[in-house]
Length: 258
Image (tube, rainbow, N blue to C red):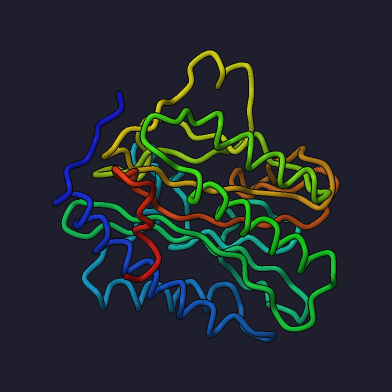
């Protein structure tokens, strides 16, 4: 069931979004060769708790005791698409490091992700990241009340594929509000299912839009840890995300630090 947000609720989500933005900014600063993913995760926890926020990822989902996600962030490196677990992996020059952060402040959520290009990345990795980030920008620029999400998703998919990338289809964006995951599901591509049950954008709808694109094929696999998702062909992947509110005039990005 889709719940539209009032302006004062959107402002509460913006407050959460500011914390996510500051956390990701700090993560970018320390994501350098020699640092471990655990060190990035621990610094993120320090930042968002110092800002009176509660992390949304650790132990998610809470209804599966002992099986919830073990990190404060999702940190996904190179061929890892999403849900990478922080640990002793050491970041190296040339890595593409996807960092996904979600927090709650005063009962409202913010969720955003970026991919950090560490040092001297290969040209194909730089292009992957730049195109994927632009796919997210296309979504933001084309949101309007009354428009169908399939229209936006088609533009996103077309741009990625025209630039030689594939779009991950197993994982999609989502509604967000007082819970991290709310209706509706927000795919980054057009499918029969989306066309059958299309989403009409309305003022007050808040979405976590998160394109994931691959250098190679779109197929993914989940590793033995039951969380980390990798590309089936082990080629690099990139992930970008913003929490975005639909307004009367277009889109309002709530995780851009404003």
